[in-house]
Length: 369
Image (cartoon, rainbow, N blue to C red; front, side, top):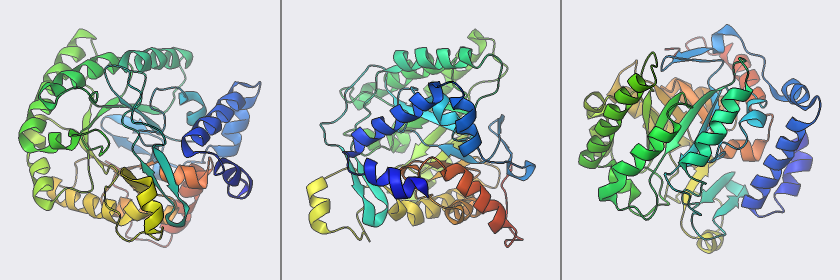
């Protein structure tokens, strides 16, 4: 409540992108203070129970709530974010070469809808910079167990789709020693032509090549098993396209799906048409995406069977929203826009609320695969 009453109004007076960096700078400073780490964990880390634990993708998760890609693009804030209670953090989207992204302003709030519009354009410092920070973070753990780390990878904007596979391979190789799983991002609406890679032929070619690299890198590094590779899909796909994706899972060795990315739809918004036109294009996230993302999860669960791992993301802000997606078939969940609107206590609030709600839901299926 303190965040909503005091901090959020201050941050919301800033440009959204400026507010993001200002908030994370404050968290990083608090983390670096003597006693700061213990204080942050005391304030924000949730109390977990065995019923919330997950074993998925061959990885242990303390609970199902993680942070979606896009928040920590360059692996800059893994320490402070881990103190907020996330059981897993997905960095990126990381591209092979650094790129500045689209022109600013490129991030916009829709407070009436508890939503965001972004057209960031994969702004990041490149795969090598992310790999260096990940290595430093891993070494800094000194044997302690941090959150599971995912690496979300994409192509550079100026790379033609015909050469996109090589971009993904470069980012894959750079991050491989330091992340626990990968997510292939071909579904952002903010890189021209990227979503064309979701079509069956180019997607099959890309994923099959990454599988070959996965096997060779696993052997090269003497790892016990290859890294799980997941695919992040758009909420704007047709049922036919979704069926195609389900059909290629076995031949491409995909280990899971992330459902879903942001949407280009503007249906059902409370924000004025004038405001939306002033903001322009970009992917919409937050509350308005919730229902469609849940529909996609339920459909992919039906198409992919009961045991295929699905990470649900899109419009999760409360315990009720979280349970809704778990009941639709998600195994794990990711937050982004809900974190912006609800603040650093959101993980604890959702998990506490889930424990309360589950008492009244005797048929709740935890999907603890």
